[in-house]
Image (cartoon, rainbow, N blue to C red; front, top):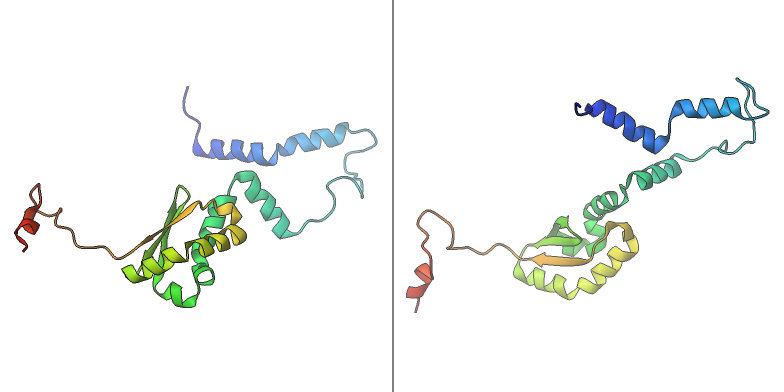
Length: 162
């Protein structure tokens, strides 16, 4: 049997999430006391809902809360870390619950390591859906002699120092 097309998979997913639109019409016809074309003015589900409530329930149903909270956290790094600190550090990404922050210098990485508990508390309060379990602060990348066309196994050029 052939694999279903992308359009049919999307249709079936929407049908699962939002329900079958034809089923609602059939149920409305079968309900006692309702005629085709008539509606109950104060029936269940007739109250207007705000757009924010609708979008919140949709993101909850589709499981988008965590990725949205993570991207919101990355975008609001200035408010989380403070203006001065954010000038010297940028969030690099989130991988398996670990927020990686790239720092301008090792001194800033050390300073932020000392502020880890405070930053984690702010994240837990403001973005509980982000799923951040820990933070890793990285200093600037140090030069490495392990890469390149002329690298050799072992200690390499460092064994001639001093």
